[in-house]
Amino acid sequence: MLSFRPFFILLSAALASALNSTLTQVTDALVNNPTNIYFGDTPYAQLADEYANFIVVYPSTPNSDNCWDVSSTASLTRDGGGDSTGIASMVQYAKDTWGVPADKVFVTGTSSGGMMTNVLAATYPDVFAAGVVYSGVAAGCFASDSSTVDAWNSTCALGDAIGTSEQWASIVHDMYPGYTGTYPRMQEYHGDADEWIFPQNLEEEVKQWAGVFGYNANAPGQVQADAPSAGYTKSVYGESLQGILAEGVGHTVPVQGEEDLRWFGII
Image 1 (cartoon, rainbow, N blue to C red):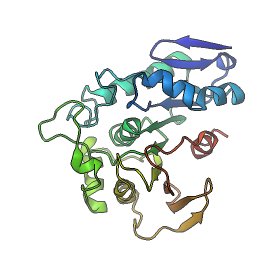
Image 2: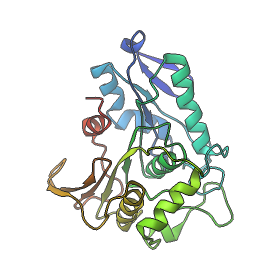
Image 3: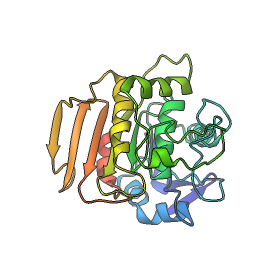
Image 4: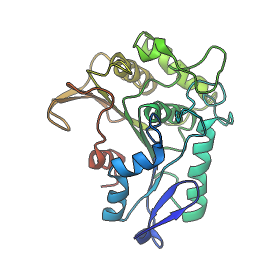
C-alpha cells in the first residue's frame, strides 16, 4: 500500500519506521503530465515497495510547457530561487520529515529532467551523493544569454555547444562559487540515434564531469560492451563517472531501474 505526502513525495508505507535512503526523482518534463507519466512508466515506485528502503520524490515543474528551467541564472545558481532551488527544498523537507541521512540522497531524470539532474549536481553538490542522467545535456549548456526562464537552446540541443573539459568544469564551479567539497558520482546515458537532443551532448557531459573529477575524457579506464544491456556501451572514466551510449536508441533512453539503484548503492 502506498501513502502520499506533499511535494509529490511517494512514500512506501513500509518505510515509516526505518528510512535509510532517499531517491529524488526528477521527471521527464516533455510530456503532458510529467509527474504521472514518470510515476507510471518508470519502475521506481514498484522498486521502493519491493526493497522498502527508499523514498521517491516526483517534483512537478511549474513551467507551462512542463519543462524544467535549466536556462535562467536563477536556476543555474546555488540558492538562486529557480527550479533547482525548489527541488533542493523538497529534499530538505524529506530530510526534516523522515530523518533521511544527508549522504543518501540521489537524483535522476530523463530529457529535461536529465538536464536538471546535471544542474542539481552542479548547484547542490553537497545535497546529492550520485546522479543518473538519461538523454540530457551538460549543466549550463541550455543557458540563456538573457537569463530567460525555461528557454530552448538549439545550439546545445543540436550538439553544437562544444567545450573542453576545463571549460565545462568551470561552468559547474561557477554555479556554486567557493565550493571545495566533493561532487556527486555521475552516470550519463544517451542514445546514438537521438534526433531531439543530439548524441554529441553525451561527449560534452562526459567532458564536463571528467574535468570536475580530474579524469581524462578521451581515455576511459574501461570500455564494456553490452553493459548494462545489449547494444549499450559503457565507458568507465573512474569511480565517479560513467558514460553509456545506447546503439539505435532515440529520444529517450529507457530507464534502467535496478541499474540506477546499484549505482546509488541502494541495492
